[in-house]
Length: 145
Image 1 (tube, one colour):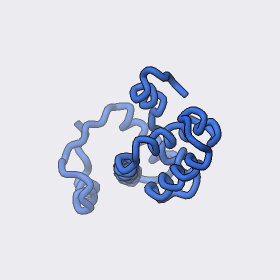
Image 2 (spheres, rainbow, N blue to C red):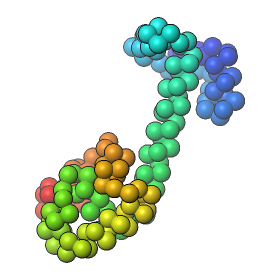
Image 3 (cartoon, helix red, strand yellow):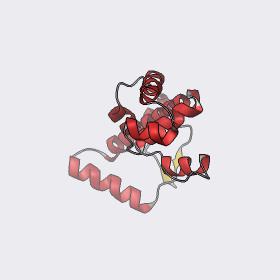
Image 4 (cartoon, helix red, strand yellow):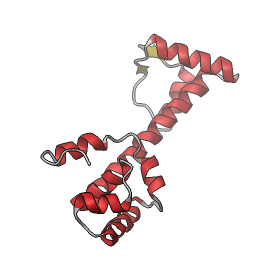
């Protein structure tokens, strides 16, 4: 266990970012924090706070994206998955057996629900999601697009 210095623990607790005095950190992570602090001329505490902030931001962003995903219709999910798998609108239309204009309509709905404006923004937001496995699970007989 890695006991946080009282100053950093107090700072994190005051911001509601921790509810425990102990963090389990492995030696590799501690070494990386120390190395980053040396290289950047900053304290280990500053690096640790930045890591916690980045982790919280990621969790928050992923939670918001998951809520948006849950708000999509099944067809919108299919369109989104194919977009994130690099398919073009006409390829999506063929794969789903729908009109090209219908793909555009689904994309407008998706962009609105995610508060985004482009496929590029959508792909960037969901770059860590595994759409190949999702597609295969939800289209077992069809296989990948």
